[in-house]
Length: 461
Image (cartoon, rainbow, N blue to C red; front, side, top):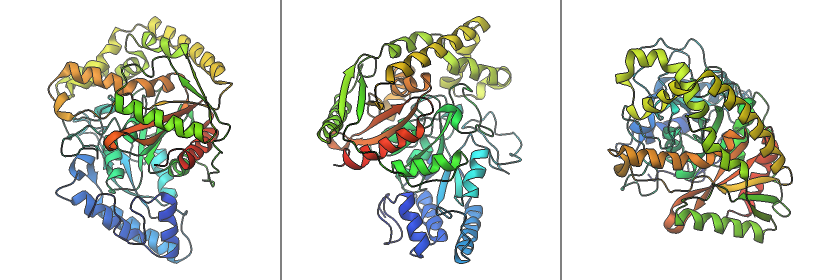
């Protein structure tokens, strides 16, 4: 069975949450059928299941599916999405399970006593949690490689073996291969958007303070955002509402005609690969043909961010605060490519950190003012295609360089406290790229409506 096909002829090959909800409502498919189909894909010996999941709750998922089917038959479905299988990144607490955050270091911890708030909200909407998705150890990389759990492969040139993007790596591969129909993730510097771009999906990063982080193992308290990976803008919008504790509403796409988009010429196009540039420029041409007004101009604030992060930035300082005791006791059990980045936080003084907080506050204010005349920023999600795993497996220098390139553009948005979405683009030969649209802090609803319009009108092949 092809990775994107459905076990039920009543569903499209790559069904959206709304399409699955409609099939459930009319009885064309049951939650149990959906879960059994996902489990079969996870179990496929030729597939990526063992690398996309660190734990599969087979019995729990089937029981939850049967419960959702019974509620629906009784006319008491918890939401239109009740019964849809979803994956959860391994840094979220799930009651009764150990939260390892992709590491060996936490494997001996006690099971969580309660679900993370976001997991609880998904359950209250009736989503069926099918398992824990693999990730970069402690979410500290944009590539998705993990020596403890393996490296899930992106769909593009799978026989070659390309990274799936991090840190929500297993979640993206699981959605791309139909092992789940959406994935709960986090995004500190691109960890939802990069895997989405590398795996031909849609990934959303909300304004950082929009969704509770309670029950999610932290990387950077300042930059962490709770987001999702799915198959459409409407899917991500529905998930975002549920995760924020709100009722999902029908998403009204904003017309593309008249949109004012700023394409930043500072930093975002440095070292861009030809295939990514071609896909991005083709998308811009479609947007202009649909009536969007494209402005290419410098964005000086982006040029300041590398300097602000020269000592490791918020991520190094705040992760070191979390890990310093664990590192002292168990450093040998860490992925050395992760521990070396965490330990950069030891080199920051309290004064350095306070300076960074002040500088970032000023940066956010100036970036907001620069964006005021426009509806959104438009830039490539990453300047590179997913690199080959073999090229990075034993070359730490190459890994470090490529990792920073993958993270660079998404990090620009986290540093200005924006909201952002990555939409899938097809480059030459089917090479995956992403169109990132980004808005000001708190502009989530406006950005999602804009992105839905772009998706509907300007990105069709």
